[in-house]
Image (tube, rainbow, N blue to C red; front, side, top):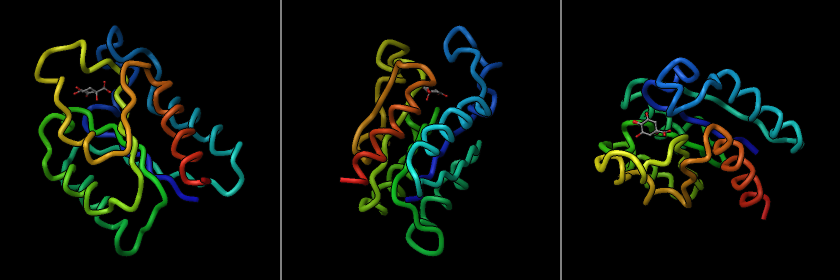
Length: 148
Ligand code: DQA
């Protein structure tokens, strides 16, 4: 089982960027946490992509249908959540592959422009507001869903 974990723009700065909103945990810490979860599940392999570029995220999602298939996706599209028809379409293009959207902060309790997610309707579910632990819950939910 292979799961792709995508993080969008500015999430490479996790731990440094607005820690009062996003916390002090770094992206490297999140990756370690997710690798521990994967290790509990024999045969579960993770691939990580952090990109500040919408097209790079679309390219990787498109490759799922050609030379780089995966069984599931955990995605925090960050600011592209609220703007990217392209990422939403790319997720829909591989709709056989379940995706779970993660937001570290509770986007519904923040500025109104963050309330709408263009990408969440293309996912099987969304976790928001649980801090970086949300990535772990998303990964566990995805593994359980794929195993069923
Ligand atoms: C975010 C929420 C977005 O609104 C914001 O642009 C981010 C991070 C989150 O994880 O809470 O960059 O996706």
